[in-house]
Amino acid sequence: MKISIILGTRPEIIKFSPIIRQCELLDLDYYVLHTGQHYSYNMDRVFFEQLELPKPKYSLDVGSGTHANQTGKMMIGIEKILYTDRPDIVLVEGDTNTVLAGALTAAKLGVKVGHVEAGLRSYDATMPEEINRVLTDHCSDLLFAPTKNSKLTLLSEGIEKERIFVTGNTIVDAVYENLEISRKRFDVLDRFSIDQDYFLVTVHRQENVDNKKRFKRILTGLEIVHEETGLLVIYPIHPRAQKQFKAFNLGIESIKIVDPMDYLSFLQLERDAKLVLTDSGGVQEESCILRVPCVTLRDNTERPETLEVGSNMLAGTDPYRIAETVKSMLKVRRDWKNPFGDGKAGKRIVQILQKVQKGK
Image (tube, rainbow, N blue to C red):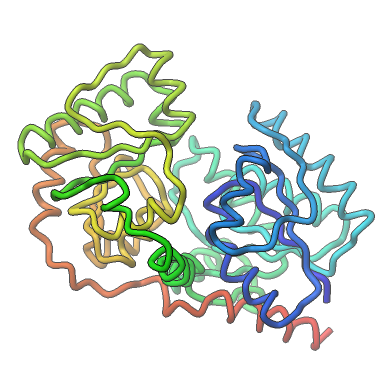
């Protein structure tokens, strides 16, 4: 069995890392194709090195662009590679344009598609990610659902149960494995001279940072949180957000805005935070796993399990709602049950692939 792992963003590298490690451990025939959706491979090189992963066999360096332009470029590049280095199955993970491009291209070529993290829904069709999730799920042959809720969603959309496997989420594996790597290397609090409690912020989604009103309201909410609690608010700003911050001529004084961090540093900072404020789906999951309270700066979430166990609350972008939600989440007990699995999802997914291949 030859496996093609197609990825293009840093969250995908993180969530694929347990599967890549399993492929290495079992000496499977596989390769990684990096589309370079957000960054060039050269910028991501350190990411693979830090996580102790082998470098991709192929790199497209597509870069940013409109959805159609970016997806089209990726499909053209992926098609050429799959023609010459034809796998038995293509694996994609999540909801990016890379995921859609990889799944559509493979399906058109008659190559099996496995979707890792299948069945997530925000039910907000204005989000590009939601379109990508739905289309990818419906052209995939194997759907690796992280939770029972995700499986029920897929079944309700008419996908046959034989194609769906509840595996847990590879983010659990990744958090455990990558924290262990980071512990051996450094202590982030010492590195950044942090000696007080703090809140950690990530804001990068298109619907937030490309909308001046929403972005400004979020920043105002962060200022209110700082004023009311007196705690340090750290915001490692995403390149997209940084660009829009400057374009909108926004200003903020009481928040510590820092350059983007490497993943291992961010993971440690997340683990030790008093609370996390985010619009990232992955950070909602990670904070839940790490038992750090989370406030989500969106009106909906495709991670409802975090709401159900009490690790997360939706705040939207109203400044005063953000502040009130932070107050509420600071009172919760950090003893919720992790709904995303036992940290063995990567192993399960690879075992399922091997079993399906033997049963052909």
